[in-house]
Structure formats: C-alpha cells, structure tokens
Length: 171
Image (cartoon, rainbow, N blue to C red; front, side, top):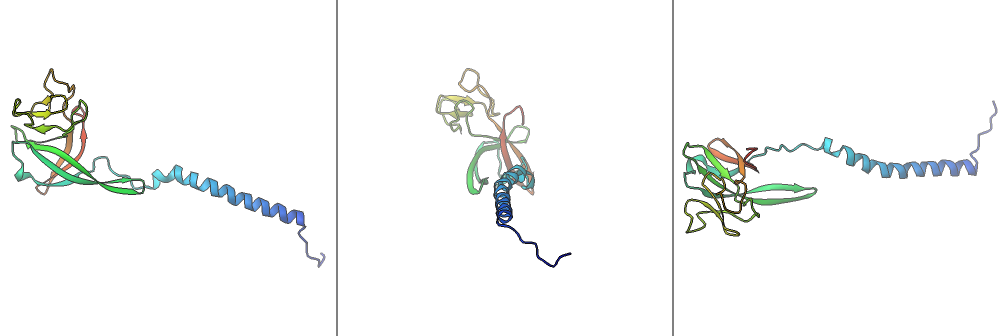
C-alpha cells in the first residue's frame, strides 16, 4: 500500500456536488407530494355523526315548533370559523322529538312556522309560497317536491344534541 492520499479531481468533485444538489432538489419536490398523499391517513378523522349541544333542555321542547339557533366550529384547511345553524324543533303526537331543517327543498329559502296567515299550523316558504305540513312533508300542489330535511338528534343528560340534516329517506 502506498502512503499517498487519493486525491479527488475537479471533475469528480463537480460530479459529487451536482449529484448531491440534484438529490436535495428531488427530495424537496417529492416530500410535499408524499405528505399530500398520506396526509388524510395521518389526520384525526372527524366523525360524520358529530352532534352539537344546541343549549335546549328536553323539558323545554313543546308540541309547538320552536326555532333553535346554535354555532358549529367549521375547519376549512387552516381557516376556522363558527357557522350558525338553525332548526325547527318540537315533539310530535307520540312525544318523539322532531328536528327539521329550515331550508326549503325547492330553492333554498328560509322556511318559517306559521309564516303565513292564510296557512296556519304549517311551515311556509315565502319565496314561492311553498308549504309543508307540521310533520315536514310537502303539501301537494306547492313548489317543493321533497319534504324538509331531518336533523340527526340525540338526548344526553336531558339536553338536545343535533347533527347534520339528512334527506328524509336517509333519516
């Protein structure tokens, strides 16, 4: 063996430097794409059936529909905001809690209980005179072709919790 050190030529140095720089650049492009691909797996999954406390005691629910307003935290990417939600809540003849979305299924206007003097004891949409019976089904011959959507609901510790509105077929 010789005692001479092996020298790195300029060409080898340039080759090693450019290869290393290219590797860092490739990693810089691939890591975000990889992170994007596996990010949903790493995120905590929000359950589709998340229910929110609407601040209404079950004892305060009557047979007369009452408007209930509450806020839900919505996260869109990095932006968090509080979204206002509304429901019509009452107990039916059997004592079961009913919670309907106030959004008309015709064009998305706001439906109110007894909103018209001509049609008492009905949900009324002022946009195109849409009407719904108290059970949320649409009155035949009026613009809405589907019944009001029904909120998922649960009762815990005497308080009402509401989730997302679902079409009546899925509720």
